[in-house]
Every structure is written in structure tokens, then in C-alpha cells.
Image (cartoon, rainbow, N blue to C red; front, side, top):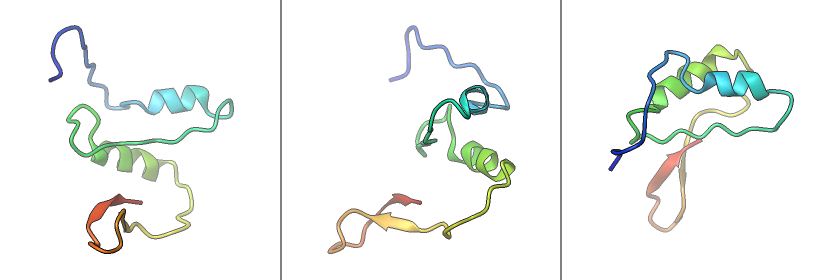
Length: 75
């Protein structure tokens, strides 16, 4: 599906430079999917951990339908 004019650049810093250049100017939410090989979740987790911010809540799964208790993701 990712073909054509799309150009991915691989940088160790990933998208962290965007946050660093815009922090303090905008409120931002970092979203990372687990099926995009260009933006892996592990890179996002490493970036978040490198900020040394306090953990307010433990990492946990969330569900959309409490009846099925199917995991929809993690927060």
C-alpha cells in the first residue's frame, strides 16, 4: 500500500525532532500504531522514556466493549 511518491527517511531520532521544535508552542499528542514499520511502537516508547517524565498511571490495556473485554490498545 505504501508505494509511489511516498518517501520514508530513516533517522534514529524519528519524529522526535518535530516535538522538540514545537514544544511550548502547541499541546501535542504522540500517537504510534503497531503495524507501521516506519514508525514502530518501540521507538515511540524509547522516546517517551528518554524524556524522564513521571509515570502517573501504569501501562495497561483498554477495551472498547466491556462485554467482550477485547483489548483495543494500551494506555
